Length: 293
Image 1: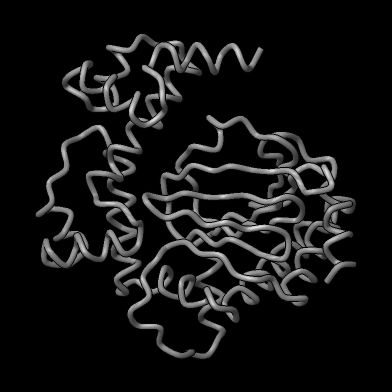
Image 2 (image 1 turned 90 degrees about the vertical axis):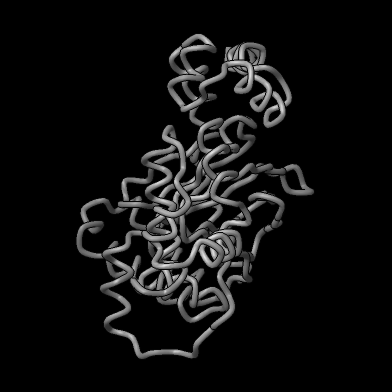
């Protein structure tokens, strides 16, 4: 696998210290130090392969670590905080990712046989070791950056192969469940989408449980198993991350941001913001702005 990793590192070497588009649909890469505030975000469903250095991801109370020869799967949108580190040699952090497209995954699953049932597993994110077959598919995918005319014809086939290799691995059940409408993970995902779209509105647990076709107690249990968060914690983290974005990008004042993301009390907003990010809203925004100059 060393030769495959070396080629992938070479192919991704021109990535920037932020999400860098490759010209291939849903495929991106990143290189080097990433600002802390960019690593605290709501992450989209994806397969992420570490090529160099290492990364830690914290979702709720659970932290996972991954390094070269591992890949990370997140099957639903989750608020998380990340930390990236350079390799022991000093070489910069380097990773590639494939955003999950439900239509592609569903189409692929119709062509595959049923596999073993993984009842009892509900987490929406995990880490596993890469295989030579998975790396091979990634090498072919990234080579397309040098042959853009081939992308429309070949990228969909390589995307399906990457997903197929993940489906064959220990996290394959996760992709199957998220693409199968009546599994508990898929039903929790529908609720997650609703919270993401309506994060500024008060949560009504009975309505959310009804959306998931579960009792309120079962809904809480399955939601926590999938995300490590309660629905209220998920909403709060989503609100605070959106508030941080507004403060940094739009330069809005604290009171207006508090109301926009759903807080009735600016004081409560400032208190929860400081607890989450270590500084009150205005000071945190000023610190980030200064670091970006």
